[in-house]
Image (cartoon, rainbow, N blue to C red):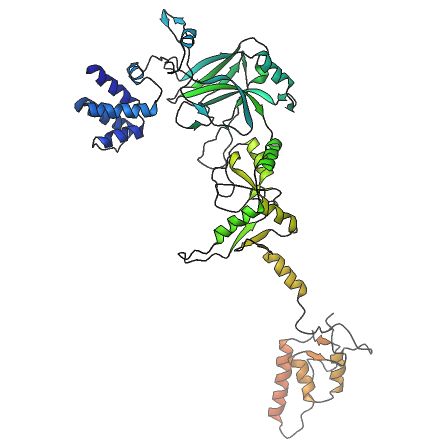
Length: 505
């Protein structure tokens, strides 16, 4: 009874927040609060209301997290003493190999991590497993730990490396890579480096990818977790290679594995995509018709879908239109640029909707490939119609440009720059012919603009508002003072003589 109680309490101490909340909710307890509050509440529950049903729930939660570990043994071991337990299918030979002694106490070697599977990488094809996923075990309570693993290369593996082609000078296409991930048997694990990582191969430190700088305020720099190429520092012979990993122990568990891989380039992946994953134009038209099919329950009827011919990655015209089979949109991105960008910085995210875009789900759009061949370079957008056909959409700026080029003037053009043959402007000659009529002076004083025989409009630049007021005022005064006498012809402007008008050239 006491042993089972201690076992249950040790199991509870290893629970995550979600496990603690599940346990407390199943027993009718509050599941709100910080993790330390949840742990204390769960421990008090085990101590005060211990029952076979409670023990069963605790064991089920523990086995869900550690399905291949011996729950009773793992829960009983003290937290300060790291002890490794072989997997259920481990052989007696494997147990005997780990026999080593430290101060008279057997010290077993780190066993392979139970059921840890690393996610396949498109640019790396696994040829052989040199070291299966093995957990990094902390040897003490220090924050900075050091773990070692050893392996040997066979003569055939050495020949594969030496005879492989070069991706670039000094880098072979067949490599030995080191991969690190979380120790979790649920699902496949992505590469994840522990804090303060350093890798030393045969007494020489190898390069580990650094952090990407972040341009966003408040966002920490992110390290690109990818396989570490350790080939240049290996003994390409049957001599044992030793890899030492320095890592930060901050509560999370990590596993390390070593593989012999064949590295692909973005060009080789593109050739695979072009030969193995192309969606036919007929299938693309069916997809378009399905999206534009009339839905009687919908209040909005969609008659067309616009698709841009510009790649959202590089803002250039699409070369090879590509999209993800699981995405709902029809917008494509350029396959060549997408593979090149993931070769340098693997994210495998759709640039249109930011959803996962793994290589095995990429496909080339056969219909859009034909459209790109048929449309001129200046067409940047098309529209799919309900019957699966399409039409180009001209840019608004280009439409406006064409409209301006084809537009004719609404009024005739007036030539204001042609003088008469006698050297005078048409307005000047017309003024001399008017004689003493008052209308001539009025026309000169009010507008300063008249049309001659040549049809050109001339502007009188010598008159201003003051001259108009002065000329007009003199005429009114003469009428008021002497009504019986004939008033002489009013002067044109402030001068007694005719002043040439300046044509507005």
